[in-house]
Each structure stands twice: as structure tokens, then as C-alpha cells.
Length: 80
Image (tube, rainbow, N blue to C red; front, top):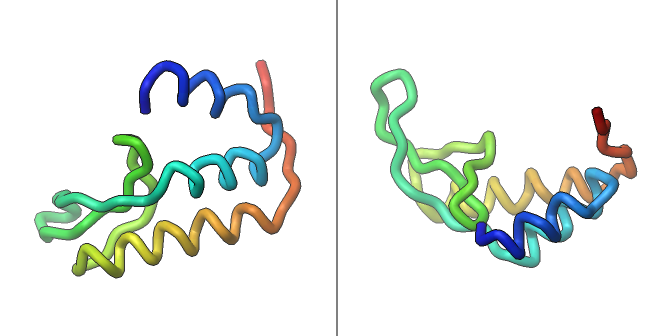
């Protein structure tokens, strides 16, 4: 994510808004190692999501689905 995208993301006040914003940027995937297994991890703008799969296309679809699930809630982001 570039600085402008990061500022826009941080300005969002709910999980739903943040998830929608990340979806608008698009989900990608790249190789990762988990427990010495080669997997694909979902990413948005270079930031990893907690989603992996053994196939790149599946990792992207799982990442999109994970974000879409987050859009169903309206949880406020905790600020310190």
C-alpha cells in the first residue's frame, strides 16, 4: 500500500469500511512458507491477509471471501 492508500485505510472507522476499501484495491497472492509447506498467501497492496491456500487462484478467492465476510459486520475499530 502506498502512503495515500494507507491514510485512506486508517481513516476508515469500522471493520466493514476497511474491508470494503481493501476489496476495492483488489486481492492478489504470492508464495509463502507455513510450517515448511509452500503455500500462497492472499495480499492487498503488499499487506498480507490471514488466508493461505495451496493454489494461487484459490488463495485470492479465499482472501476475497474473508474480506466480504468482514463487510457483513459493523464493528468499530478500537483506537488507543
